[in-house]
Image: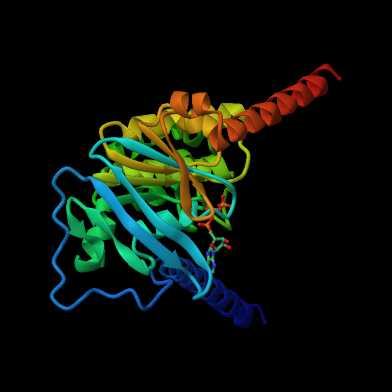
Length: 306
Ligand code: ATP
C-alpha cells in the first residue's frame, strides 16, 4: 500500500506545483493582456527615450461607451520631474496610469513620450521604459530574492540586496526566517500591503526605468510604514520622470505639480502651497485627511494609555 501511496503523493505534489505555476502566469498575463485590442501597429518602432518627458494631450477615455471616464485631459510631466494626481475615489486616477502603460488605448487625444505617440511604438519597448509600482503587487510563490530579481533577471545577488536597501525592505528581509531565501506568496510568508509595495519598489530600482508610475495603495498604512515607503520612493524617483497616483496627500507634498482630478476633468493644479492657498477642492481634501489622521492618532493614544 505504502508503495502505491508514495508515487501518488508525489504526483499530487507535482500537480499542485504545476497548477500554482499556471496561476502565477495567468495572473501576470491578466495584467499585461487585459485588452486584446491593444496591438502594435504594422511597422511599429521601438520607443526612443531621450529625456523621458510624458505628455497627455486632450485625452478622452471610456471603458464602456456612454460612460466617459476621462473628459479631455492635458498635462505634462517634464523630464525628471514628479507630477501627482489626486482626487476623489472614482475620478479616473488609476485609469491614467493604465493608459500610459497602454493597457487600454485612448478614445481620442494622444499620449506622448519624448514626442512619440505611444500608439505608434512597440508595446514591449513602451513597457520596458516604464517602471510600474501598482496598487497590488503580485508576488510569485518563490523566494524573496527571486521576487525582487523579477525587476531584472541578470541582476547579481549584491544588486538585489542593494535594491532592497534602497526600497527600505532589506531590514525586514534579514529578520525573516531564511533571509533572502525565505519563501513568500500564498504558500510562504505573507507580506503586508506596505511590504509588497516595497518589493515592487525594489524591482523598479533594479529595472532602473527612465519613467516611473506609482499607483499608491488605497489602504491606510500606519505612519511608520508610510514614512518608510515615502523615503524609498523619494530615492527611486529622484531625477526620474515620475507620475504618482496618490491617495494620501501627505506623500505628495513635495511634488513639482499636483493635479486635482474630479469626474474625469482637471479641477485644480499647482504646488501644494499654492493649492492650499487657493482654498478649493485640494485644501478641503487636505483638511479632511488631517482631521482623520489626528482622530486616528488620538485613538491610538487612548489604546496605549488604556
Ligand atoms: P480610486 O481612488 O478609488 O482608486 P480612481 O480615481 O483611481 O479611484 P479609476 O480606477 O480610474 O478611479 O476608475 C474610474 C472609473 O472607471 C470608476 O467609476 C470605475 O468604476 C470605472 N472603471 C475602472 N476600471 C473599469 C473597467 N475595467 N471596466 C469598467 N469600468 C471601470
